[in-house]
Length: 570
Image (cartoon, rainbow, N blue to C red; front, side):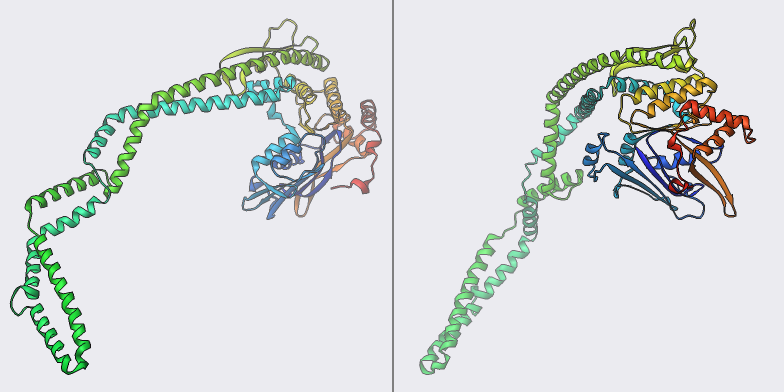
């Protein structure tokens, strides 16, 4: 239930702080005074989109905050699911800056717009005039049936199955498209794979072949160099080994006479042994290197194949070609196994479809029972509202395929005349009839839900006289059932029914126009309703009529005798 509303710098409101109470309350005021501004501000708290143009001129930030009593309405699971602090009292705040940036909070915890809307849908139902158009929408009519049927759990289970079925159908369609595309690529993939596998690729072979090609290309030059080194080391007289050996023997002989050279002789011995070993390896390498044009041609052909495959597949190494080979294999395997996968998906779709149909059938049974109850209740509610010959019928049908709301199609049929044929609401109902029908639906639905607060924005359009009084009585009764009902109205018959009466007015000063709202006491209510009855010129007769209207409506009790200090003018 909405307990208090605080608004700062929103449209024509500089600062407003007003408290609300349970039961039936009314808000009146001249056209253009700002009643719609109040609803716009409240709408921000319910998750509506924000517009920086709504800021009061010259203000840098707009703040709208409301305090709700939420205990007893089954909202604790919602708070826990969103990790919000739960208490019987909930504070919702929305801030809007002049830059267009918007922030929202629930009990000082930042929330998204979607989360705010989810909570708002459970706290307040604002019925504006354009919502009368919902009557013509099948989705709304189905929602009415579901509320009366109290089939929320069944509908949630059905939607879960329906979503799973639709996802399975989408997966099946994707797999079929992939299979079709795969079949068109199968020949191409097979050819590419066959070519790659025929190449018998090996990791690391490209580097080895490139090294071998380099060696074979310069074999003669390398061999000549090695042979020359071999000659210089050992092959010719006076080669390095001969000279070193002579030097070694000379030092060894001198060492017998001059021991100081013996270490040098030992080092010379080591150098001789090392150089002799080098000479042997050089000779061996020289023998191992030979010009082999046939092998060089084979190596170059292999490298040309590798380079050609790399260019063709836009890769840079044999390793990448091997990876591509594995990818082609997997894609071909997927094409081969697609029929089995498609069959499995088709089987799953069939099973889920049967599950959806079974749950849809249960929904249909619940709705058919609810349809009779809706017909009974609507007739009972509309007859006192000036439709003695009303006929209201819920026509149900069957869809070709189940939709998100089930397999049922629903049309509300209506006739206000005894002899008239039943036709869809949109075809036959006038503006005043639509208002009465919508109010009756709201009253019926309210009895089946835990919605704390309902706001009616001029639902009395096209209504006057005794019918207006009866509509006011319905809203009064709705407010008496542990529910908060607020009606914005221009009709004195409805205004008189309110337990609490607020007046919206516009105040002019040097700074411009400002929208204000205040709660009226008993005498102020008499004057306000008298104005609604007779216009701005108040006569004693109009005042007497207002007092009688209030007395008969039960709207002039102690609830309205309040102190100015307590509730004040905001």
